[in-house]
Length: 62
Image (cartoon, rainbow, N blue to C red; front, side):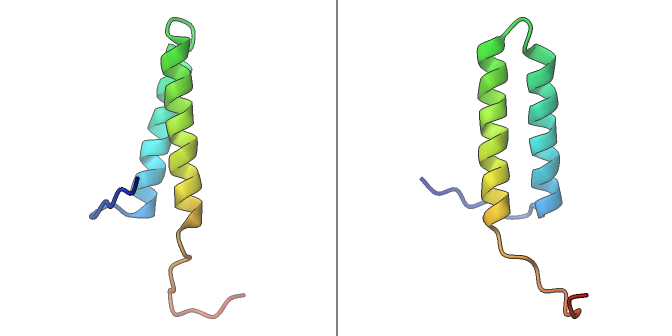
């Protein structure tokens, strides 16, 4: 399955990932299945984000 999202920068997606991980930590004691689901989603999003090409800023690499 493919999902195409427009209007979000990589930093926005990184913020969503961080929120999922914080939410997982918050509910791990009383809803461990939900915590695992949130962690799994965060990791899958992070892996997808890692596959994006590096933006070309026009600057020479250091």
